[in-house]
Picture 1: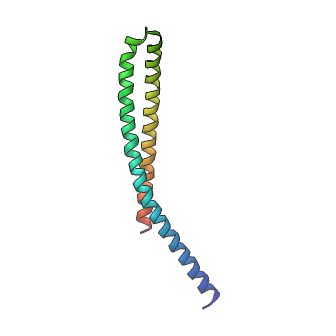
Picture 2 (picture 1 turned 90 degrees about the vertical axis):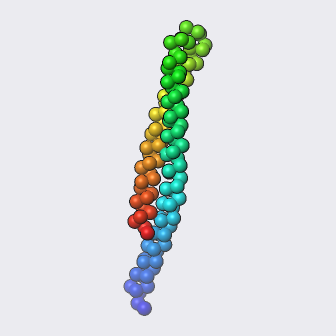
Amino acid sequence: MGFFSRLGNKISGGAHRLGHKIHKASGDIHRIAHKVSDVAGKVANVAGVINKISTAALPFTAEIPILGEVVAGTAAVSKGVQLGARGISKVAKYVDRGAMVANKITR
């Protein structure tokens, strides 16, 4: 065996090992990203409900000094949580799709 034959075998073996590791990692990422997307979607839904309730209660509690501020703060924070959770859910879906593509390519 010559130098180039051994070099070719080493490169080929390294590429094969790398492909195997990418395949395994993409399977793990797929499982995790799918669950993150589901949980973030549920958090967004709950935060949306809290936002609607807080916004509806705001006119009735605005005149009460401390309670009105708490309700307004709750409405603002829940809207922020809702938007953040929706963003996380979308990013997790993109990561999940990318992991599925990588998993199919490295079969």
